[in-house]
Amino acid sequence: MGHKIIVMNKKFLEIADKYKPKLNIERKVLKGHDCLLKENDSDIYDFGNHYTGSIKISLSTKGRFPDAPALLKLRFAELKDEFEEDSKNYHGWISKSWIQEELIHVDYFPTVLDIKRVFAFRYLEISVVGISSNYQLHVDSVELEATTSAPKLEAKGNNKREKQIDSISLRTLRECMQEEFIDGPKRDRRLWLGDLRLEAITNYETYKNYALVKRCLYLFAATATEDGVISQSVFTKPEVFGDEASMFDYSLLFIPTLLDYYMETFDKECANDLLPLAIKQIEIARRRFYGDIINDSDQLGWCFLDWSLELNKQAGAQAVYIYAEEALVKLLKLLGKDYKIYLEDIEAKKKAALNVFYDKKLGLFVSGKDRQISYATNCWYILCDILSEEDSADLLIRLENNKDAIKPVTPYMYHHYVSALIASGLYDKAYDVIMNYWGGMADLGADTFFELYNPQNKDESPYGGKQVNSYCHAWSTTPSYFLRKYYLKSR
Image (cartoon, rainbow, N blue to C red; front, top):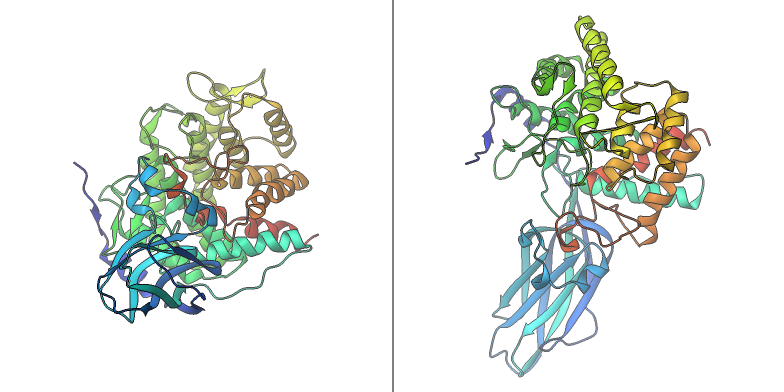
């Protein structure tokens, strides 16, 4: 039976709490529509953009005295077409309690419904499920109180399309910047390590809230297990505790996240505080190796890479290990510490990967006993600097032409695909992927970018129903990072 990991390091928690931000509050009031609602009537309110927060609804009545309560159903939606779905038809594997709807009895009028729950939405539907025929309901106003720890920031771009994508990316990150970087305000609302890394690098190019990144790094450090394992995620409410689960790649990505933070801030105290934990992730990860090749696993969730049940993770996991160990070497160099032992391990792991996972006939990296070809595997090998820039570019061309290759499923993996293209010098191709993939979400009317987007199947969900999909998700925010770092300064 699982158990939560309580804070193991009180000192680190105290440091994290020191950097807890004060949230900015934005209020928006919509006047009620000129209509009276009776049983089975509904009305939709559009707040004009995506918000994360709570609401108050002012209600009054017309007609005779309210001789019975009104039973109302409130539904919140990030996209308007979410209203086409009925929660009764959801039978997915994660709890339907994540579906944003409330059933409320109202006994007395006039009244103000002060609903304290946090919702992620643009649209609110108010439906009358039951009401006496003696009176009708009138919505006088709906007031939103939204929160974020990010300031307002103007979108950038050399053209309308770039500005549109940058604006949506900024909004996505802004909504996920609360008291920590959360993965999505609709569902989970916790700090995930894979998401944090991408949120942080985008933040460095945009909002520059270094204190929030520092807080999150210390939260992960505070909740590491006694053995030094860093959890895949951290809960902060009602108390701080680490997820009982960890993932091979997410734990390792603590190292480049720390390196990126140090290279932005030169915060030596933080780097020295957390360096032992960074080193520990490499030591723990080595236990999964037999010699210099990582052992494969059928265990669900042992390694992430992408939201795909068919994706074999073995070769990609080894590439992430090399990538993380290279980040550790860079960090040790910057801090003036010895790193030679890690260089030897990196070379051994790269040599073994080329011998076992690189198919010379195909000119691609393969994974697992079935020698599976995927974007995830090959992109991570480019990112761990195993090939020259020219050879990496040739590999990506072969990958694109291989019909059997498993393509990315999430914006998380598309981020790494774009990163691999840039690392290979294919800047124009990377730009086209940004414009077409994230632009595809924009064309669907996105105010924020989604957790999952498959251009070939826009209703796809890894959970068994799109009603629980997050349409504002941290790992989708990186177009602002790419555009501002590589394109807007030079185009």
